[in-house]
View (cartoon, rainbow, N blue to C red):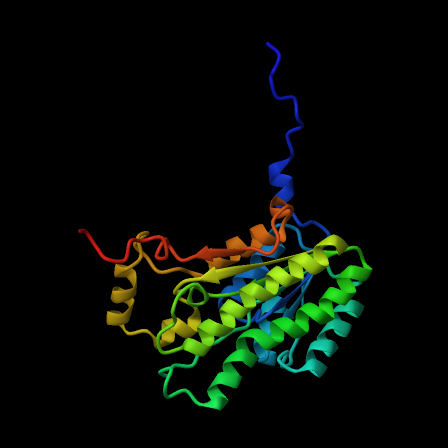
Length: 266
């Protein structure tokens, strides 16, 4: 029998591999960043620059994965973002991708939030993405392209009570990656984001009470809270050739919370 479809079948498992490629992971020292470093290493990455503001954490994860090179600095400043890009250039030779995990929220009501907290939220959640996409984008364009993956948030999709500035900054980040995709796509650069729901990172593990855990689990259709490896898996997909025709998109990883009808049974 002659098949109606004679198109070639790709090596799908091979498309997940990143053999010989080199990456920069910013915020690599713990949680989602640490898991992302392990994910890339397991599928064949040649070398990873492991970036963390804490020097010891950067060194620890670099040693843990075996192919890491530690770097420590504050990438919310132009000078440090440029220093990192120069270091990665020299260390890697060719930068195939960057994963930016950095982000944090402060809690305050919308009416009580002051200018300092607003500015801090945008520096902590958006400014570094702007700086790193420029610094690394220039280098990727010169070498034929690459991938960028940022961490957004479910708070960027809907109202973010008590951390409105965080939600606004993450929504802006999702718009920013669309602009990267449109402007740099013709030059070989893909840009995407992963938007986590509530994830049990080490910081959240330490902060949550048992009651808070139970209340969060109760709203998740999949019946559990997210783990850092859930986010690393989505990052790996967006970094690999499995997503070679995906750019400018944000993948929501929240256990179907956003998909749920909000009013209960009528």
